[in-house]
Image (cartoon, rainbow, N blue to C red):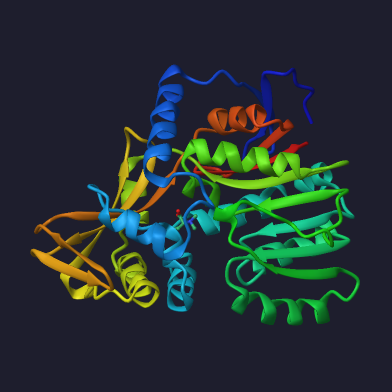
Amino acid sequence: MLHLDEKEIAIANADGQNFALDLEIPRYARARRTTDALRFRNREAVPGLWSGRAELLAGLNAPQAWISSKYFYDSLGSQLFDAITKLPEYYPTRTEAAIFSLHMADIARTVGSGRNLIDLGAGNCEKAASLFGTLKPDHYIAVDISTDHLESALVRLRRQFPDIGMTGLGLDMSEGLALPESVPEARRLFFYPGSSIGNFTPADAAGFLSDLRRQCQQQGGLLVGVDLIKEKAILDAAYDDALGVTAAFNLNALNNVNSVLGSDFDVRDWRHCGFFNQTMSRAEMHVETRMEVEVHWPGGSRRFEAGERIHTENSYKYSVEEFGALLRRTGFRNVTAWTDQRNWFALFHATA
Ligand code: AVI
């Protein structure tokens, strides 16, 4: 491993060579973050201030309508997301897995064993469980907004790994991460794979990372997966696949909104839009009307013109330098990054 000064981070490339990178952020990146900070204040407000119905109504009534991406994940949506991760076009999941197998020994040395592994957005717990043999955590704390997957996964894992203490927590992390006192404070390793950090605006990501940093006491750390900036055609395909699974995932949010709000969205009136916005360095998803439609909900309605869109998701892409700088700005240090052969995805470790 390299010794690095304050402005550098260690990178190990696919051939296992270590090299150092300067952390200066390009000026355009800073400008972009400022724009996003303003956008965040206007559009998404402070997480926790709005919940459920009030947030949905604010989004649907906004001049540029939006729905929070958390509405993707009802039971069908979670299954559609699992299917997305198996699509040929959606490279992040398998690329992150390849980074783990390529660099496992180095990752295990850097992270260390006997940690309290806190899995943020654990889902079916498969990713974290694949690390148990190598990282040998003392305790596994699985956090997810949906507890359906969690309970059955933990029952199975408890039988397989009887020496690891296991806890499941049903928490909505868009409301901030409030861990109960039962979660041990020392030796925490926050695990946030899959580039879910990209679904926050950079300003929100900074807030979330600072929050994690504050919750790391002695010997705390973070292991986070980040999708990297790449050719537009690859990203366009990843968010608009040929089979239409991503389209179904996106449109299903409208069905979920119907059940939460009592609205009457008809998915047949809407089409999926998914593409990479190079200026904003993010993949965007929208639903777009096929014709003029009027949508009703108890106490209100809205007419949408033909071709009008509702913005449903942003998925920000970073360079290794930008994300390393973000970690450092939010109080982390000893930043290490591992990438795949094509430099499409990066796994970062940093200590508190
Ligand atoms: C969960 N998250 C990291 C996915 C992403 O790529 O932003 C969600 C997703 N949206 C479309 N495809 C997958």
